[in-house]
Length: 259
Picture 1 (cartoon, rainbow, N blue to C red):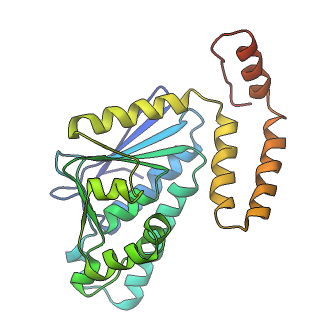
Picture 2 (picture 1 turned 90 degrees about the horizontal axis):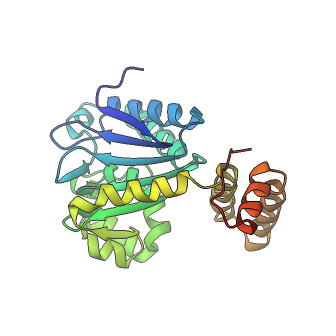
Picture 3 (picture 1 turned 30 degrees about the vertical axis):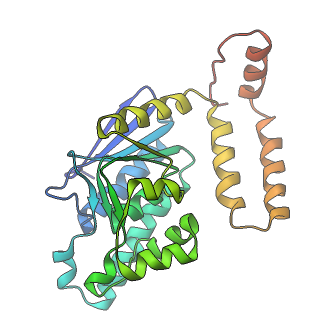
């Protein structure tokens, strides 16, 4: 589909996805559809090994969903929107490629939900993060009640969800909701640095690590360890394993082919 509110720039194995939906990069139904299409395209592109997601502008990543669009929705339409948004974010989370969210500013509602679907989050010092849906008499619909709880725990998640109060970037770091807090002008460069570093690693090993973590976290430890052992076996069937070990012994940089 033609993208109106999203741009995709690919460079050296890294896809930079930028949301540009003024004034606050709201996740309207059209933007959600574009995100789904973008993630699907990136997932199918063998040249892309990592994704960086950010918002256009200096102050706002995504300040929630399109509230005006919700005003005229009935309950069936609301459910459809929630399911569509969840499907797009599930595709991002389950993508077997590294995804990094460069939070250039405020991430509220759907913005925080989108960020939480990424593997890694880098956050500008001035940013605030929150799920303020209760202030509108509604609840999160793109996974906020579930992913937030998994990141910060039940008590903290309930406080954020039930008060609607945002938290600072530093608090988000202390709670494990973001990986790094940086000056605003360093967020995207740092995200790209990490993405390029990972893009140079063995692609199949990356995919198997992602699979083991995402599947294992929902399992009892014994079952999850079985998943890890199975993926350990699979990686030993790759040419990249031979190249990586050979390069280590020969004290040179490995050249992984994704095979």
